[in-house]
Image (cartoon, rainbow, N blue to C red; front, side, top):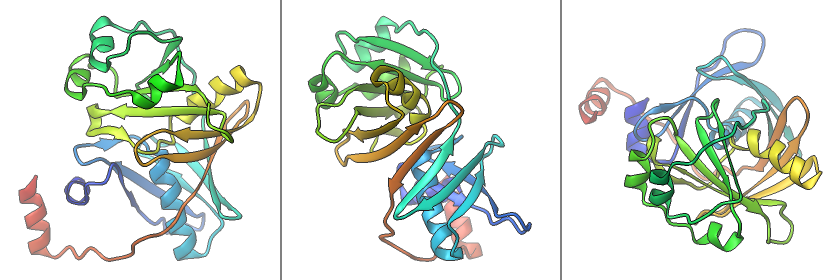
Length: 247
């Protein structure tokens, strides 16, 4: 699976195993081009789209390598997934990390141990949009963090908050659209804006929007998904040997 993900070279490749039991549950695994990761919200949404198209379903459940059950459903043309609520603890940002991301100041910070992610709320949206970290220095600045997320209240009409996500530790310098971090950001911005229904925009080069519902016991993420390519990977013995040699 790692060799296939490396060959495809997408930010994340998801692999789905069909469960033969009566209950529609699909074990799912996620790989970047360099390593297996615990979860990916974006890849889960599009995996659900594939299941709904192939099996004519409108709801199902994925189980991750950690045993986390993720419910997904189709509402009109939006795929909605349910995530646990994760909280942030107080974080002290080291000078080495600050230097590596080239950030002079920030409004607040927090660390989510479940996601191994550092969250920084910025003072200005212009800083968020122009942000250019040094990814090599960023990786060497910490061995406990796998992702840095920067966020700010939105100055774009129709959205509540903005974000960008950097995770060079797992082979993705900047994630174009991120799902899992909203299990933290949903509750954070719910408290700041006093709203449970939120719209987020990720200010990556490609850009992406998500619909977030922040409830007391879960966070629901929704996004529109479009199938742009269908095909088959033929794993003959020679192809498998070639992929293995590429490792």
